[in-house]
Length: 85
Image (cartoon, helix red, strand yellow):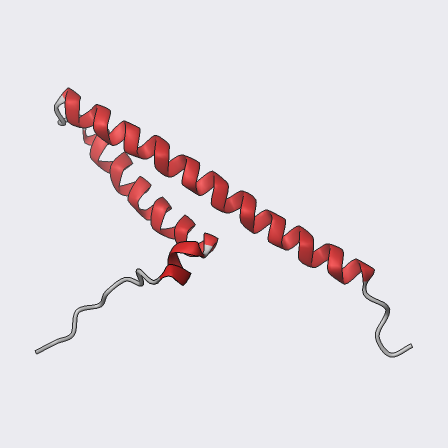
């Protein structure tokens, strides 16, 4: 019997902006691929579009959080005293 790979659904993975971004982007790419085929009923297209808009917001928020983390790290590095002097 082979073990199934289970994606992490721990609170840490959900709270991690990188994991949230990657998962949302993967789902968004799948939605775009489905919609580009052009063979979906209107109601399903609308539903997928709404989901895609929500995922876009999640991606944007995750990227903003990551950018803030980088800025904080750079600011902390700039304010640290020089090492070894």
